Amino acid sequence: MPRKSSSLSIKSKWTKTKWLLSDRALRRFVPDTKPFNRASLKKMTRRYRMVYFKPTGGTGGHGIARIVRISSRQFSVRKDWRTTKASSVGSLYVRLKKIARGRSYLLQRGVHLRASGGRPFDIRVTLQKARKSRWVPTVMFVKLGKPGKVVTNYHSGGKLALLGPTLRRAGFGQSQIVRYRRQLQTLGLQTARCFNRRSSRFKELGLDVAIDRGGRLWILEVNTRPGISALKTLRDKSIYRTVVRYARGYGRTR
Image (cartoon, rainbow, N blue to C red):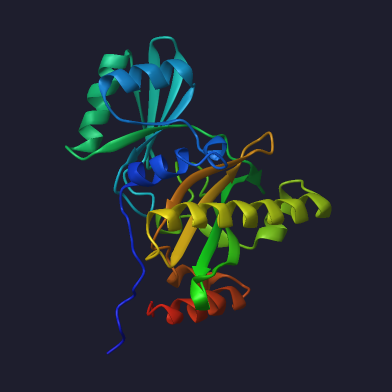
C-alpha cells in the first residue's frame, strides 16, 4: 500500500493570502482581498469595477462568481453560465449570501486576464521539494478558460496548454517569454520560502498567476495540493512525468 503524502495542505484561501500579504517582496503581486461581509462588499464594489466572489475553502473553481459594477447602483453577477442583476449593494449582498449558503467567502479585486486565441488564461507555476528539502520550480503550464466561463480551471471546462505557444499567441515575443519564465520562477521560489517560514512540512505548491492586459503579474491563489492527473492531457508528457517523479519523493502517488 502506497505511503500517504507527507506534504502539508491548507484549504483556507484567506490564511494563505494573509501569509503572502505579510511578505514585503510578495504583497505587491496580490490583488486586494477581503473576507466577505456587507461593509467589505460596499468598499470593494466602490473601489473596483470587477470583483471576484470566492469560497474561502473551495477547490477546482467551484462556487466562484464575478461581480461587475455597471453603474453606481447596478451590478451584474456571473456564476457558471448564468448572469443576474442587482439594483443596489443591499440586493447584491442578499444575492451573494444565497450563493454562499452559509459558507465563508472572500472578495478579491478582479484582474482582467490576458487572452490567447480569444481565451483568457492564467499560469500554473509548480514548486516541489527535492532532496535536502530544496525547493525546485519543476513545471509551468497554462490554464485556458472556456469562453463565457468565470474561471479557467480544468475541472470547470478549462483546457491545459503549454506556456510558450500560449504566450506567443497572446502577442509576446521570444525575449518577453524568456523574461516571464524567469519572473515566474523567481515568484514561485519567493512564495515557497514564504510558506516554508510557516511550516517546513510543505512539499508542493501550485501558484495560479495571471498576466493582466498591461503585462503585470498577479498571484491569484496558492494551492498546497495541486492537481496532477489533468497534466496527462498536455501534449508534452514530460510535464506529467516530472511532477510525478518529484511527488514520489515525498510519498504522493496521485
